[in-house]
Image (cartoon, rainbow, N blue to C red; front, side, top):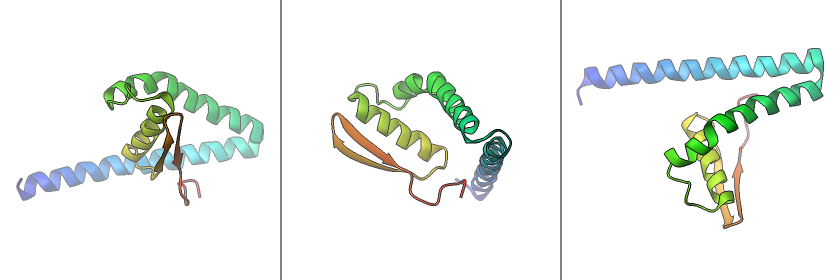
Length: 113
């Protein structure tokens, strides 16, 4: 690769990183606005609905795309969330316990804090 190509890729990466940071800031502000104006129950319902929709639209196709559909359900789900969060720039940790138990952990600080 030459310096021009590397520079263009770096610039593209910075633009996408800026969009992700803006999205996280907007989403955080939206959640905090719902908490302060409607209460924690409505905020919890809002967050649940946002992430449930993402799950329904992306989870099963994502398992196929990431090559995880052959794994036991608990392991596939944990690895999917680990990889999809990592791809999205959210640092997570993955821990395998058994075919029926696997964990992901969001170490502090999270983007909201």
